[in-house]
Amino acid sequence: MTPEVSLNESMEKAVKHYSSLFTLPSYGKVLLFLAILCVTGGLFSVTFLSPSVDGLVAGLTFGFSLFFVDFLCDYVTSKGVLKHDPIYDLRRVSALSLVSWVLWFAFVFVGVALAVLLNDSSLWVKLSLLGFSAVLILRLIVFSATSSLDFKRTLTASFTQPFLCAVPFLLVSVKIGYNITHNVLLFLVYSPVICFLSSCLFTFLLNRVGEKTIGISSLSLFKAFLLNWIEDLSAPFEEFLEKLGKEQNIDISITRFDASKSKAVMVVPSVHPGPFKNVGSSFLPSMLKTALEEELGCVACVPHGLFGHELDLTSQIQNQKIVNHVTAAANFEASEVKASPFVKIDNGSATASCQVFGESAFVSFTLAPRTTEDLPQELGLFVREEAEKRGLKCGAIVNSHNSIDGAVNPQEALDALKNVAVVCLERAAALKRVPFEVGAANVTPKAFSLEDGMGPGGISVVAVKVGEQKTAYVVIDGNNMVSGLREKVLSALQSVGVDEGEVFTTDTHAVNAVVLNKQGYHPVGDAIDHGKLVGYVKKAAVEALSSLEHVKVACRVVTVQNVKVIGEERLKTLCLLVEKTLQRAKRVVVPIFSAAGFLLALALATL
Picture (cartoon, rainbow, N blue to C red):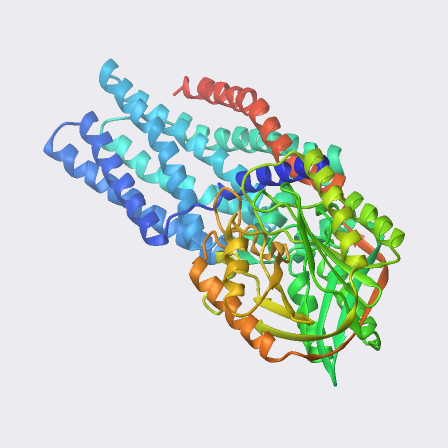
């Protein structure tokens, strides 16, 4: 469990860094801030240098000119130069200009203060030109790091706003009495060269981190991530994952219940549904559910297995390979007619549940109300061995993944899970198996979205009646649940006639990286009203109970050959690459741009 904790921490750090990039205000607010900054900045800078009525008029004219020119530049850049760039719409281009103006006016205001203090208006001009250079460097770096268009267009987008907005600065300089010499014009040629070279060196050093670490430049990977986060384009990012992935055979456990026709199917693939959003296998649970329900005409559930991010699939191609294989393999005949009662054992630290169908055990684990995150494959191997000792095949092993509330000690948790597994298997194996009934139902709440933490698979309930005991398996398409919600659901189920049960989440990562909070997603119940959710579960349970009928059951494990997974080490490296690149940026930013600033200052000294 320890490696998985480390991997989750790495992913959380990456999400935190990426999330900080997308907290932009609306376009209306950006435009308002631009207007305020340009007009007030232009007004104050000129009136301080020339405190008169003419200075006031010149300042207002200067400020409105800056805003008007900037507005035109942003419009032309977004609608023309970067027209086919999926990232840079008018809002984002304007937001970059707003940041540019904050930087530029920082130099302008320092120049004003020095000019007034030393009675030398040339200092204002020189600091304004230095601000021009700083903005040019900023835009060169941002566009080269984020735009997917060619070099010519990104260069044009970088230069347009600073150069055109420099014109009002030069005009107002003449207005306040500064003589524009040919040296100023030479600086406007010299400065872009220094800015371009320094920004190229900076991005080169950042790219080298990725090239040395995984053989892929850091910024090309970053661009692919942006395309996914902003425009939901998974292919660019998945191309990198396909290159980095490794082939592995994937086992899928299928438990099928049939009456006169198919009634329900429970599928537990040895694949982790991640890493995030629509990348890799994030949507696999709902994809499998949809495909199986169309193929078999019954309710399908895809709870989470004992696997972590090391078994994320690399692309939609691999998803489809799994889906195609499972739907084809699920068409087998059910023949067993007996099941044991549902057994649940809680030793105070961990809970195990087991129900035997035919000769196969359906086992699940939770640490609720403590955090139940990804559980190790080691536990699965242990359970299979213990089941075989008791004459049972191990049909499926489920990680309930139904509580999140801080951290747990991995080794203590694993020991507790193993201990409770032995007791649970022993008791279930000893129980008499009798004919049984199954009912199933789906509910897809339209009120809940990915942003709320609910995947497209919604809520499914499989009800099992053995003798007088009624058990409900509740499967929610989400990534974990807030602590305590599981207990609320189980309590509510008793009010509709359910004696026993367990609540599972699919661990879908389709809900990850779609909101900008600390975790990068909402666990089930974090943004969803508990009362409403419990109501939907009860509705599905009542429907499932009303459809109970005698069934036959069959369990089968199928293997899909040569499926590409990301692998734990590769995924961890990808996540840590963000941190490494940021650390490199912090180390080189000061020496590179200090040197560039020094060369620019030398040129300004001649003005």
